[in-house]
Length: 330
Image (cartoon, rainbow, N blue to C red):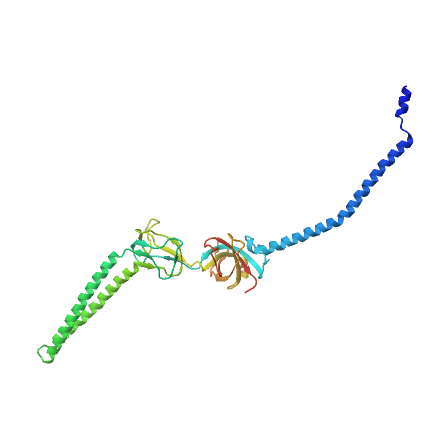
């Protein structure tokens, strides 16, 4: 019985050979399929590498194109729509002309008609100072002038009377000369009093402070009731020295510091592109308007001011901006 079981488990040589043939057929088939897959995938991989290379090239070009408006600081040339940028520097937007309105004398603020951000026009009344004292001085000077003019009229009549009598020897010529000298002294007194009157009137006029230009109130430095003066000789707790700060918002520049190694790339009237950091997609035309006559030895830089052409509401003074110095337009 055991012999029969062993005979049942015995594998015939032909069956064993057939099993080995099937195994190697599967191995060969798998190898052939893998080889075909590699041959088919090779061109696609090449195309993929070419596509990736082209995308990288386009990305590089795009970066170079946008570099003129987004790079923080770069000294390498970049290319933009209008010309090559030879230098890119960061700076700050400033008002070309900022005026701080100060009083001409010590006084007290009586009224302020504007606040920060208000638009003003040249000649507009913006501040009134207390003019009580100066109006009193003006009234006093006008009274003195009226008295002096009355004295001149009296002495003119006296002089003419004595002069006529001296011709008939009723009055001496010395009396006539004395009357003439008194009249001339009175006329001189009238001129002096007129000067005092004009000075008092000037101080009254100075109590009315007007805007010196068309612009916007950048700062309101005092309030009604505060004491102001032209110049403070004390510390920080002394009287205010200015009333308002006014500037023209349509007259803006960018102030930049350029390293001495890059000064050869800059000249007066060289065209520039300006882009505010707050709005990097906005680009404004400009030109180099001012080159400082003296460098900062400690920093090794020279201050340059770039005038902005056609500024708008997106340009805010004291915010940072990027300036591209262009190769063209020298």
